[in-house]
Length: 145
Image (cartoon, rainbow, N blue to C red; front, side, top):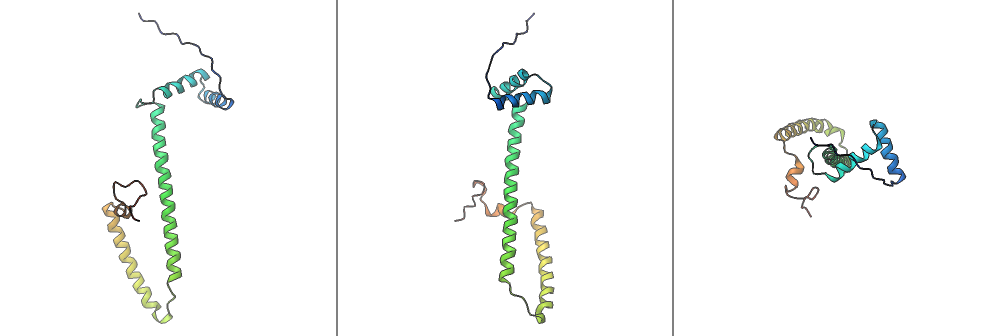
């Protein structure tokens, strides 16, 4: 029969902030501080494991990076649209009343055409930035000078 190995004691000195973090974690998990430190050290020394807290942390980091990119891209898109609208409003002169009705009718026709083209484009699954950005280029590098 194999005897269970007895844990060995080690005395370490921690920075007060780190000590507080360990104590808080132990309190939240209703575990001893020794178990919290032991688990942290196990994860630290075996990060290649596919399961456990280390893998979850890596996955969450990747999700965080993707969300950051998405947030950045959304900000760029909104700013681009706002700049385009501002530029269009500054550069487009007001129409005289005599041609306003014809312009409105043409605008409705153009808008319907735009919505149809947008629907076709979205149905293909491709996005405009994919056509502009080469597939092997680093993110954000369009290759355009």
